[in-house]
Length: 196
Image: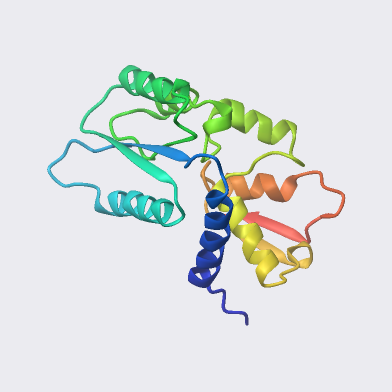
């Protein structure tokens, strides 16, 4: 059995990215949109996740701006995302999911306002379309990059393994499944894959 040390690998990735950022002409800026539930209780796990992103980003030399909203409707949020997308000082955008009070369809409409080149989580319709049309050279969501790094770091030949993907969500399960399906000549067919 192999023990996968995610903390160690994450630290190595942060050092690598920090070195790359250090030679850039300007500090990259990430804007994270966070919509609170509007209830008395703050969504502590989501807030902690966002603060961890901020700490990690600052550790590597990026500027991280959290734009927090109590209640905001779909149109107003879409407008804020559009403004960030048109702002030349902003290099990346994340709309933190879930978005309380906004339906699935409205959430997708908000995500579609993130410009392709600034869509960090690769969730907008245009990013998803790119992923399916150009599977070999497309940019993949962060979870896919993380899984790839694990396979590479631990020399795991997943092509000959039975694979179980837990969850079908757009952000994790579906993204990994799509990556496994890409038409890449050096992958070959997987022995088997099951999505739970």
